[in-house]
Image (tube, rainbow, N blue to C red; front, side, top):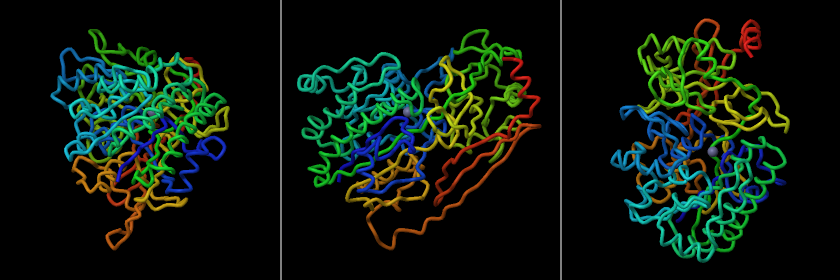
Amino acid sequence: MKFLVVSFDGLRPDLVSASLTPNICRLQSLGITLSRHRTVYPSETRVAFPSLVTGTTSSGHGMVGNKFVDRSVVPNRYIDTADAVLLDRLNRESNGNLMTAPTLGELLAGSSKTMAVLATNTPGTTRLFHHKAEDFGHVRFSGHFREACTPTAVLAELEAGLGALPPAPEKGEPDTSGQVWITSAFLDYVWPKLKPDVTILSYGEPDTTSHFHGTASAVTRSITEFCDAQFGRVLDWWEAEGRDAGVQIVILSDHGHVTAHTRVSVTYELRSAGYSPGAAPESGVDVVVVPGQVGALYLADRSQANLARLVETLMNRPWCGPIFTAPKNSVEGLAPGSFASTLVFADHHRAPDVYFSFKTDDSIDAFGMRGGTFYDNDRVPGLGVHGGLHPKELAAVGLMAGSAFRGRGLISEVPSGICDIAPTILHLLGLPVPAPMTGRVLREALSEAGPATPELRIECETLQTGLNAYRQELHRVRVDGTTYIDGATVASTSSTHRKEFEAAE
Ligand SMILES: [Zn+2]
């Protein structure tokens, strides 16, 4: 049995349709759709894909954000995990502990099995799918970035056959050339020559296009259709040959998108409140504001009093959503009114002192898609973002097909998540699921029958906390001891808040 995991970065499940993604729909009719599939918090690419390959949340794997502050060195340094060369250096400096949980690639190698990666994401994301591929002679190819590719000799062979790696498209331009290159690399070389036990084929779209053109704009729809057509080439191969060769297909996305509607500047607002914020650790900066849709704040003075003051400052802002700090108890964080970061499995020694999300709502965007949010970036309103806890940011595509899975158009309504994929693959390969994996084997999706298949217990829970007028609510669901996040909200701000905010703008 072999596995092909195909990912569409940032694809919202509600964009999957017979007109836009006919090939995904074709596979749906042959397999089982995980209709309540979702990602982890923060709902960012370089948190979610490490969760895919480690089967655990950021509390386990330590990739706490697309960008984070490394406090293990003096002076502290700012890390952008899009940089594949930097990731390699960090991994070597930490004796192989860039990720603090074993990855699928390493585990497979330990059982003399192989994993291949083909991706058009950033160089850093590409590396994170299998950051130790070099150690085992496994292949990891980017559709654009040479620095993320290994081994060099195989890349040369591939380029001789397929043409040179196409250059990355200009910022904001949809990526078509890379999708064609990695698809051909799989069909023409990686499968026929290497037959890896597990292959990850990761299309970096429609994420980038959604960020620059909106959740369901014409250009986002067009690149989604394009990626689906590339997957269609793979599906043709699967139906002709791959299925009979025992290949199981898993389709997924790493998060959804919501629409950014109201811009704020966290740095400006913290400065107004008397802080000296900065984008990176340096002298004179008392709080590092990591840019992005998940608010991540690192304090120079980490005292309880300073933490409480910072969190209260955020809570008084109308754009502020759910807030998490290190746990005081099982529900509350150290800062009064905040939730414990353990509730969203985001507690790790690399985690910021404060994680917050921007306030979201269920507004409908210009393209008819639900989900809106405040945001802090330099782009115009109306474009796609993710990172927080709106259900449309968390919702992800999940679909499995092949002899190992129940199928023929079945729809599972049992909650599932990105951490469940690796344990399910290991289980089906007959390999042990190691303790650091907190995801579960998706038994309800497996064709293997028998008395061992237990009745699944599904329990929902709502947790609440807050301070003064600020109230926040977290929704979670538990399936057989595995907990998933359904979303989080804050109570609507008072009209006084709203007026103050408008005046400040
Ligand atoms: Zn992504």
